[in-house]
Image 1 (cartoon, rainbow, N blue to C red):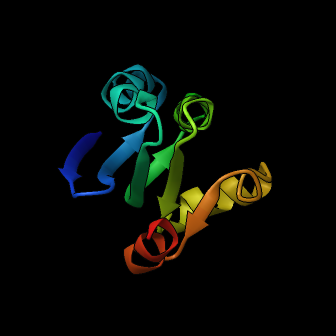
Image 2 (cartoon, rainbow, N blue to C red):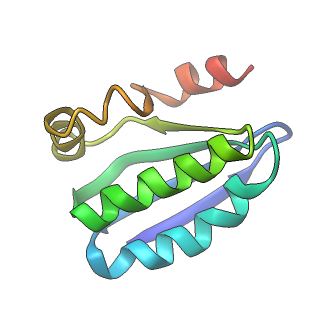
Amino acid sequence: MEISIEQSKSYTVARVAGALSTEDAEQFIERMHPLVSERGSKVIVGLDQVTSISSSGLSALVSIATHARLAEGRVILVGPSKFVKGILEVTELDHWFEVCDDYAEAEQRLA
């Protein structure tokens, strides 16, 4: 798994690539937690390059979104790959997360 982080004036974009597996979940949380813990944080998580996701990976996504909400912030998932989108739908987490098809839509929601 690779994570690239870009900071803009009002939000952060974290692009995730590869498998978000059990082995990677802790690293994902460690990288993302500081971004979502700040009060009022706005984070876009790009999932279009994620090839697979484990239950631990899903748990990591829930964890960062929960931390953001507790800090009155937001996490928007963008462009989940077909595999990830299917997992989100089967688990009904697509209704719990804020999910956008593309970065432009996510940026509009955060404006």
